Image (cartoon, rainbow, N blue to C red; front, side):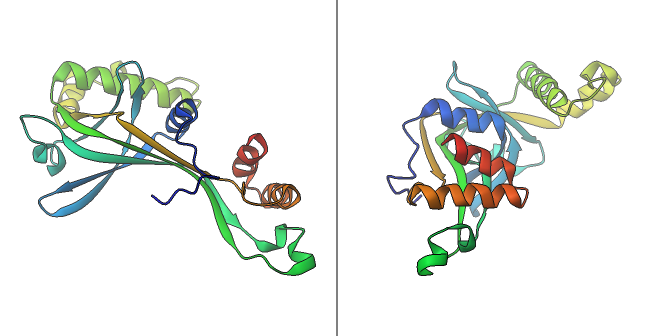
Length: 208
């Protein structure tokens, strides 16, 4: 992606992985027999092992396109906070009128090799961990667990999915947060976003 130096956050691996964990629904982009394809999947990050993990439906042709002898090049796109930026929020606009609309956003691209993990133990463990994590995030008073459903039903559901891994070979990060603007204009954007309820984006701009 086009990534000017003032927006490039690629060297801050910790910040990039933190964004992936906070916004785990990624777009897995691959190139198969029919051309480019994208699958939207919630991912688990295992930094120690250097991989992202997810699962796809067994009916999804993606996993069958991965060569049995090795992996397939893939990219996963994660998007963090994002929002429209009105020129009206720049104090300088009201003096010179030399501002235009734009979007601020955070994105991470993970480049790596996609491999298939079609083992029952792998899939069961992955689903259990993803369930625990996201039940916790959803603040359920009584989090759902795999044991809440009949064992034969869970076995049937697990048999219908296939595990995958994507190696964390190269990470690109673009955090476009008005770094190319004067400080007063940047603060004006923060105030404008907060005023229209875009507190998440305003918050990351304050921290940045």
